[in-house]
Image 1 (cartoon, rainbow, N blue to C red):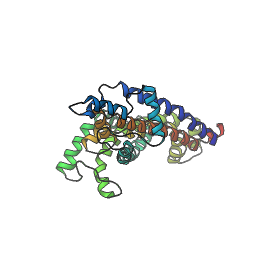
Image 2 (cartoon, rainbow, N blue to C red):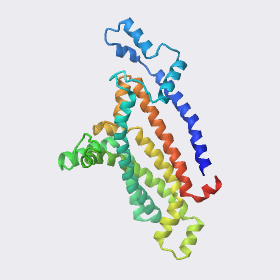
Image 3 (tube, one colour):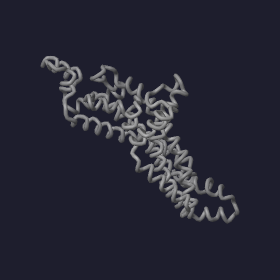
Image 4 (cartoon, rainbow, N blue to C red):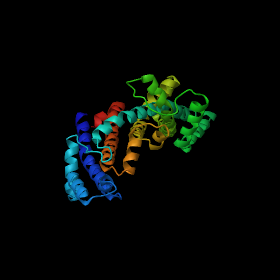
Length: 315
C-alpha cells in the first residue's frame, strides 16, 4: 500500500512541472504590459527600463521561468505589482476564506445530495424518485448569481435573519463568521448537491443489481443494512472522485458568488489581479489552485485503498 501511495506522489511531480510551464506560458500570452501600468501615466523610459530589469522581464522567457520556479520552490511567489505586497502573504490572507467557504459548501452538498441520491435509487420509479430528479435538475439549472440575489432579498432584506454581505474571520467570531458564510455556502452547495445526487443515484443503481446485494437480501438482512453497508460502501468510489474534483473546483474560487456576497476570497483576488494585469498574483493563485486539484485527486486515490480492500491486495 505504501509503495502505491509513493508512486502516486511521484506522479504528481511531473504533473506539477507541466502545470507550472502551462501557467507561466499562458500568462505571457495575455495582452497588455504590467510594467506600463506600474510606470504610471508619464511612462518615463528610464523608469520602464529599471522596472523591466528589476522584475527580470528583459530576460528570455525560459530564463524568466527558471527564476520564477526557483523562487516558488523557496516560498517566494513574487511581489504584487499593484499593492507591492508579497504574493504569498496575499494567498495566506485569502486562502482560509475560500477554504472555509468550500468546506461549508461541501458539507451542505453531501448532507443534501448523497442521501437524496440513495433514496432516489432505492425508490426508483416512484414519486420520490421523480421529485428528487426534478429538484436535482432545478439545482443544476438555476444560476448561482440569481439564487444568491434572491436569498439576499428574502433572508437578509425582507426577513433580516442573516447579513447580506461581508466576512468575519472564523477564529475571531465563529458565530458571526458562520452567519456571513452560510448563504454563499448554501448557494454553492445546492448546485453541488444536485451533481452529487445524480452521480450517487447512478452509482447506487448499478450496485443494487449486483449479486452480492441480492445475496444479502436473501439472508434476511434489514433493507437499511443492505443499502448502507453492502450497496453504498461499494458505490462510494465514483462519489469520492467526484467530491474531490468538486472541492478542488471550489478552491479555485467561486468568482460570482464571492462577488455577490462581498467575500474576500480567491475569486475576488484573481478578478482584481486580472483586471490590473498583476501577473505575479495571477500566477500564484492559479498555481495554488492547480496544486489544490492535484492534492485532492491524490487524496481520492488514497481513500480508495481504505474504502475497497480488494485494491489493497492488488497494489
